Image 1 (cartoon, each protein chain N blue to C red):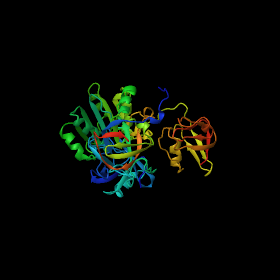
Image 2: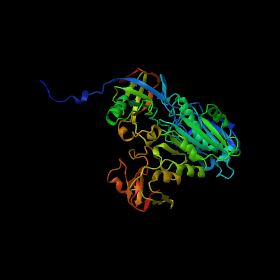
Image 3: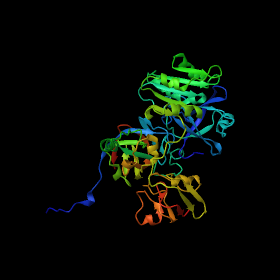
Image 4: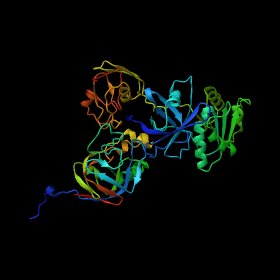
Length: 169
Length: 314
């Protein structure tokens, strides 16, 4: 006999996305540097990046945060800024480390997922800050509310390259 | 120690470039690119003892890994230039602001008029124009004797793009003649001592505003807020009273007074800097507090005061 009851218990979040851009920078305010690959260290951060635990050179490093070892951003948000607000924002300007395509970042808070060969745990949504308007000279604070990326902890480290897959567990 | 909201640099070169003038090169300690600057942009230097001094960039803006400034030692000044000349050495760390402002370089001819050390922003501007393949500009430098930064001015003079007027040997040329000699539709910019700026300003009074530029070393104006008013911020626990100018940031005023308030987003959405107020009527302007919370909390990163006095539980 057919049932119309939705099988909620079997609902999953399945996705396969791609790493499109990688960026790091050594210190607050400095331009982000495009990388072909970055090395993620479990429990610490990205080699050479300002928020690597032990380096603490980021704008928010005076408030250390275990769950901010690597940050991700949707390329679809850059497309939406262009489409809906006529704002050209480059992947080097949003100041997150990994720009991905096809990954529903806002759904991942509290979940684990694969970024290339590394395993991440999403800790919280990133919050836009006025600081980014000061650096870019673009009025993007409001348009980035609720889609400013994702903060993650690194559970299993490794090398992440442009073109790597981003997969649900 | 890291200074919040500042760029860490290291002094990598100090050169004598004229009588009482030194040129300082500032770079990231590891050679990373620095935030981009417009030609002739201003840079605040955060000096020991809380001194903040502003200088124009004089290097080519396309040299992305360095900020270059030139400083004249002013014995009668307020101490910043003497500190830079007498105490700063190669290898020292220096915190600086993001570069701001700069010399507008739109299409058409540019006439640059400088007095002495006021040549700095125009050397940067000239360098930017040359990098674009443009030579539609002329730089006039008034100087008593050899001008500062003569090594940067000399190639421009040799190319017929700059002229030095040594006022110890010849009469000071008239600004009016220089302006009258500029081609139709030219832009004009001036940097130098106050009398020169005033003279230039009055002579260009009838020019279209977009074609006149004065280097005044003032911060960019605040966006006008019709509701802004000055008020007194009272910190109940410490008894401190802070006068907040109209339109100024409450968070900045608290920070300057040494109050322990952490600002994160700076735009009233994250809730990090929330403080309790005890008396007064805030203008909230945040997007994170509920109507109930607004009865006793405010976000100092965006809030103002509707009245003359606001008492915080700090």
